[in-house]
Length: 90
Image (cartoon, rainbow, N blue to C red; front, side, top):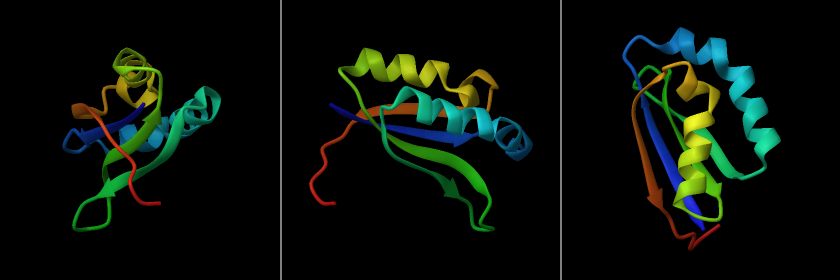
């Protein structure tokens, strides 16, 4: 099943994102369940959140992935939403 993981960063947390980016990208590579991913950008072009599409067995696996993301462990996010998603195009 595909799950969209949608996050919003805490205000003023860009340095937290930058400090943990390598660990986050390694986690994506090592876990092998990310189908596509990228940051949201604010009006200045600064990273301010993320959209990550996970291909996992169930919502519990998606929650476990989100809980163990280095960004989450570093306290980057103001909010995290997991939503089942159906791929139609692309």
